[in-house]
Length: 152
Ligand SMILES: [Cu+2]
Image 1 (tube, rainbow, N blue to C red):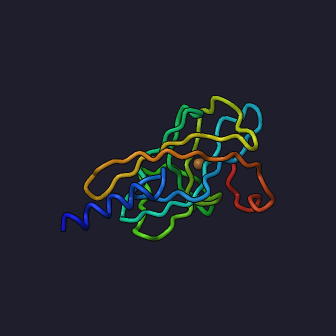
Image 2 (image 1 turned 120 degrees about the vertical axis):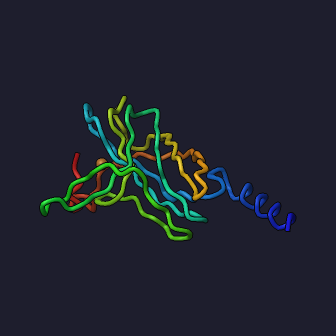
């Protein structure tokens, strides 16, 4: 039994810098124009075991929140949520028009090609927290995003 646990740990450690429990796919941040104070970060999150995204931080933003888009009086609006459930093995997409990590009180302009460090904090069922450091690349708006209706 002990041996099995040990090898699982070794495999988790070898699976990459993004560590044990959550795989982060294609993280990116939407580029901003000068003076723009907020933007979104997007990625896909796949948890090996059920876990929950509970917090996000970034040195480029004074405030970072986890947001969802929801209908309110037939208008799509975004709002902060306390956490985002990541069911085991099922990718959760953070994308324009849906869930996103909201970067607010930006300290600098997000320019195309720039790399933005973001820390994601996940919590497992035992309330154990883990930080995941990622680097998101800044990408400009594209035509596919115009129909999302997600504006800041
Ligand atoms: Cu938002």
